[in-house]
Length: 117
Image 1 (cartoon, rainbow, N blue to C red):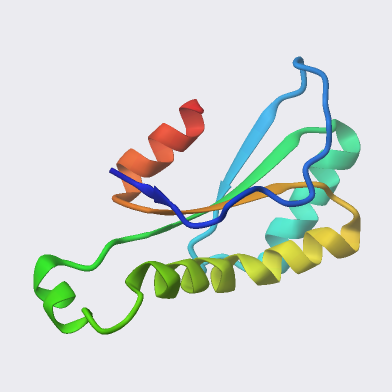
Image 2 (spheres, rainbow, N blue to C red):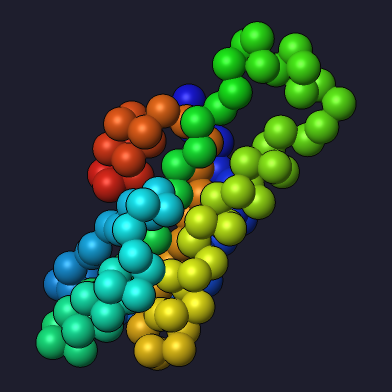
């Protein structure tokens, strides 16, 4: 079961129900400038609800034995926000509204669940 990292999305715009949703999974492997440019271009052509998502894998049971003294949820939340920050800053500069969410869980299950919500 995935746990939420961020309390609420930021920079959310109000759109009619007919506006499409775009889910962008941020994993730190893509150039945020290219992603932001593509999203800005897409948003200018046809407004969309843009959702940024980062998924952090929970530590294994063995790792948790060594991590008891730290707040693992806080560390994972900070890691997720750190991964999102470059893209968020570029979208802010371009004036593109978005929501962001950080989740803890298995990639496939978490992304599928988030996409359905």
